[in-house]
Length: 396
Picture (cartoon, helix red, strand yellow):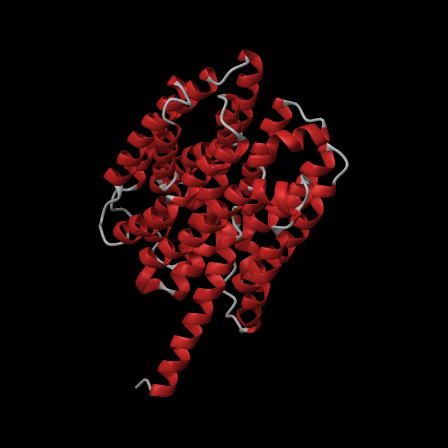
């Protein structure tokens, strides 16, 4: 029999976990979305070519693929909450230091440090949701993707104004200031990190191989990879595409912010709905159609209807909360979810590595955006197919 005191303690524990979850999620895109609006200034300051800028936009997916695979082993040894706490500390340190790097190579290296912190948090949050909020997976995933999008939107919309107005045009301070948000998230994880945890039986590398033999896991990985390619091309290049079409830096930043802001209401609603239905296949197909429309509009003329294209791309970006929800739903228990999350995210990010770099290289080779945007239109096809397969009512 559960006493009133025990019930109150359980509710208090869930509230603490939810606050910590949301504060961590706010930080998951700051390191990336703050760069795009000041990419021109950053390239000038570091002497960076378009191809190297394309490599910069690929750095997140490389780091997430490589470091994400270590997250399950770290979580088994130290506990998910402790690993997430350390990840946030590493993120804060990387964000604070990287803008003051004197050259491109060191800037990329310090970006890897910040992104390594994000990578482990990315992988572990779905299993944290499954473990702490197993009866509310869809709505809780929706809440933390809302927090993620609030952080992404804030960084995208305010980095330029902060740089020009608060910091006298110093883009380095405009980027470094986001470390404060990561620092603020750290205290909320301290009580969770102090909790004792039951170390599960060792899961060997063969367990990840077994997950990798499941077609559902591969469908999730491909879908994760394709939506990541789209997301990081948008994050890395959309403001520049608009600026090259004659739109001001401030408006380009706001247009980019729209793509993130739409994820706030849409991400929550979509995750909550997806968690209540048996199949998410047609949701994934519908999002892909908006991807065709958004990238097709940019290919036609970015300045023709810039706000409409931004809205379409904001809708297709909600593929991210959808795939996180599907990962949590496709696993039978938290242990399976963390392995499925590690496999789908790491393999997916491997698939996504070439995309942002190819966009930059194609832009350099053709001196325009039509060829890169045609590539993105074509990549919507495997995204739709994989999303349809991943969304079917199956479990790993």
